[in-house]
Length: 491
Image 1 (cartoon, rainbow, N blue to C red):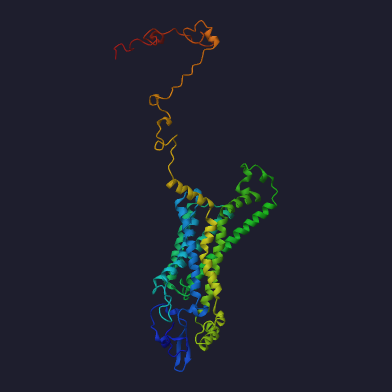
Image 2 (cartoon, rainbow, N blue to C red):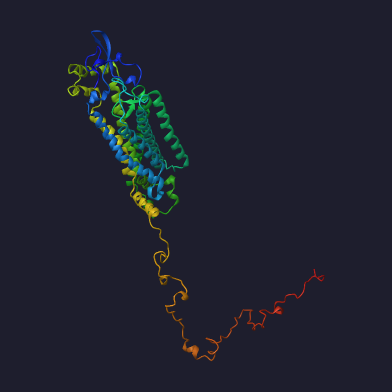
């Protein structure tokens, strides 16, 4: 509720700017205009916040829907990050493009969640909104939202470049591309956010989350973001057009070599690759990266929509002659009705995007994390978590026949001596009876078996030797070894 004593020479519901200090809060965020009065020309301002006068008193609670949506979606993003960090790659198929992209989405979700707990005061006084210098919550929410937006759009562009190089130019992405992606993917957002906060800043404009200011906002944020988004979109369209071109060529490819068993040959080199072979290679790449392509298209669409709506909003509230002419019917309605917002709501629609468009924009931004989870949360992740908890908290199983702690009966153990089992009968040894032929042999009293006659091969120089004498295993004379040293001196 505004103080009626601050109206001064201005008609209700406008407040006289000269009655307020010229410092504190975001002074340029005041919605003021000089009007002729009985006391001369006076600068009169609409009370803060401006969004309630344009869209109604219930616009602030409606913007909290985006915050509660982010509360439900942020745990999904955290689940993905924990899965990438804890589980092996065979379960998650993690990649640095996915990890960095998810981190950017987390920053954006936090920007909508913080106002739910902080309950920031949007206005510094009755006509001045707070900015990042007068409210700490504004500084955090505005920085997180814009920095997260930078990260998401830059990594979308990097993913598009990687996809284009793999499909159209058959480039194998290695460590050089990865480190270059890290440098650009985090360096450009950090630099862009720093310059934006220095030259433009953020303030409360619509809802509990701070957004970029009007002054130099187009040059510091919206133009660079739009350039990267449009470049990524154009590159994505060119890549998909090339895929369609290769597919159409493969339909008319009658080369019989493409229907062979797939064995490598000289004719299948890069310089002589057929259309159908190129299509098979591109199809494999698409099967691996279709999730990233879909998410990039969703992000680019949201960013372009976000930029168009807020640029339109900036242009509508910029204090210039054209906007003042558009706002005169609405301002006169507020004066004649003494500030009845509902009665003048229809005439406020010409001032910028309607309420439904802005609410849809905030909800779409908070839903980016849901799309990221749907596309990159593989079923194998849940299997990996089950395996992880089972290995950490499940009972250890040893590869033994029985657990000695559970079984106390020693007779159930394996590989024990007969002395420990006096009650058990030792199995009788299995003795094989001699065959009838061996029984009939005259030498059965000495050993089993008959004497075998030695047959000397025709080209063999060996001969059977007699049994060695007792106490000696070999005859030194048969080896012709010298019996003394060859040196007569005995050295």
